[in-house]
Image (cartoon, rainbow over all chains, first blue to last red; front, side):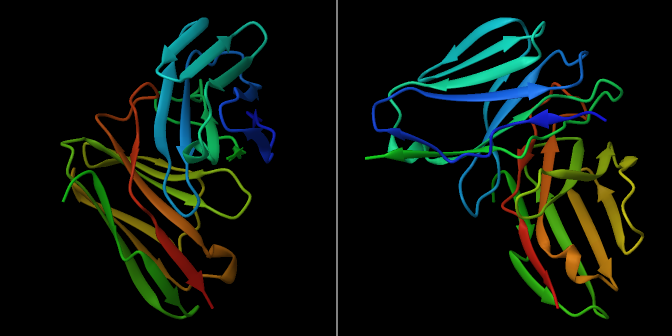
Amino acid sequence: QKEVEQNSGPLSVPEGAIASLNCTYSDRGSQSFFWYRQYSGKSPELIMFIYSNGDKEDGRFTAQLNKASQYVSLLIRDSQPSDSATYLCAPPWMDSSYKLIFGSGTRLLVRP
Amino acid sequence: ETGVTQTPRHLVMGMTNKKSLKCEQHLGHNAMYWYKQSAKKPLELMFVYNFKEQTENNSVPSRFSPECPNSSHLFLHLHTLQPEDSALYLCASSQVASSTDTQYFGPGTRLTVL
């Protein structure tokens, strides 16, 4: 059974702080990850795609992938109230060339 | 219209009704997906079409019937649904059906089955 685990939250941080969102996965073969953001009542939108060990930075967002530990994280620097949303982690299924497994997501609240 | 559009945005239906959800993508993509999102549960993949061919039926009950007449349009035909089928139904598209291709989501159809 392939699983993706995320703390459901809510993770509450003050405005300007660093928010750290974590994701663990059971499929040792997962080579890449998507992070999606979903605002309440809206559809998911892509934040980041990471496919190699280490860090990938895009503006205020940094994704970190550690394949050996089967752990991926998303850091949001200088958090803003507009970052308040649910963040979904999604690795591909290794027995499929196109399926993604989505975690339940972590709800982030950024307090003004 | 840009991106991925879905109609209707909200749908209330009885268990004996027949209705259809429509999805259209304006991105020139070749793969389209149907997902179900229930409260407090992860996104569940239902169907995948790649170049109009169905490549995935993720053990979805036959009361859900997909149709993909061309690469830009995807339908989900509904009949004799159950109250537990109430959920947000999301359509997505990607360049091709690949686990490294970004999937772009439509706004979803909020379905309520009475």
